[in-house]
Image 1 (spheres, rainbow, N blue to C red):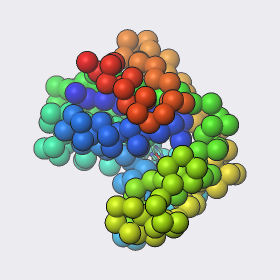
Image 2 (image 1 turned 90 degrees about the vertical axis):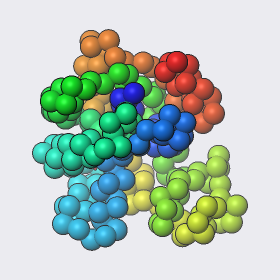
Image 3 (image 1 turned 60 degrees about the vertical axis):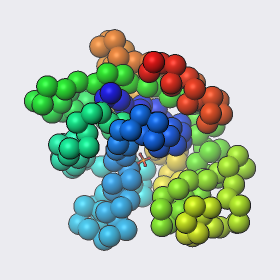
Length: 213
Ligand code: AMP
């Protein structure tokens, strides 16, 4: 099953992708996570991506496309994958279609997770991320057991630089301008499935499972 999770930042794509990955046994591929891991290791790619991420802007298409091409060629993607945060532009979607066609593959479903802007801002500014394992918490809806500490690994929780309010608003503008056109792109291909991302984490997962039956 080859899936794309589409939706604004803060729609819960990462959370749902993690759970779907465990449920269906296919890898969760998050381009944002790949950039953050590279930044942690101090690679050239990580440092380059940081310039854009800190401003809430998209990393250039050619950089992202190369990374996804390499990742999708790995053996664990043979039985399927969940793309989270890619594609984000029409050029990326075209490149994805082409690279999958080269290996006789195609996208099966695009899950369009819908959430209003104010909910996005509310969710992201209260989001805390574990510096060690990347687990995410919400101060109100999913708080850690001990303040500032990750429940699973005890790592330090921090606010992602791009989760500050002005940057969140910039990310939403980028989403509207560059990513939202993909909704029509995939709708016209008959692949789009709408999901209400404003419901609870369990309800969202239940509606995704129904779609994928
Ligand atoms: P995310 O964790 O998906 O919210 O991504 C964090 C940031 O990484 C984004 O705001 C972009 O700066 C960058 N990024 C992630 N995926 C992409 C992509 N497909 N195209 C361009 N930039 C991306």
